[in-house]
Image (cartoon, rainbow, N blue to C red; front, top):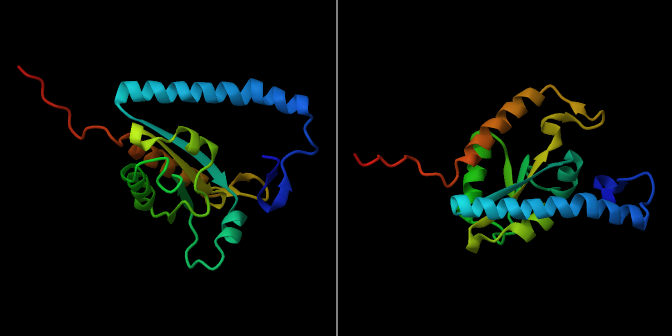
Length: 178
């Protein structure tokens, strides 16, 4: 994006058309071709594909977009209001974050964007969930450096990721016939 939270410009100046086209050709297109291939492979191997599109959100965005709310979310799960992932999968992801004591919202203020819209097809067992994480949980946003909670947040996200990786797996392996 050209503009980020608080109306700040992403770049010092405008990109030339040639530079923008070069970035699309060398970065964006190969990334999405590979992502589509990975979704196809996962669906073939496991009967389903779950794409996690993880982002960090500026704390000020939460403050400004969630004015008037008693509890502001620390995590926002975006499934395009059910169009990009089955509610069962999103429920499990939400439970993983809540089990760690985090405040979670769905689709507000971020419902998911291009990636969730493009790859999420729950009727075809292709699920895409955007996860927005409040940067203030792990970062001094002014200095853009880790804060005192960084290591704890890293460990927490490792546990949550492990739970998410278990979604859809059989709880027990069947016994082999003797």
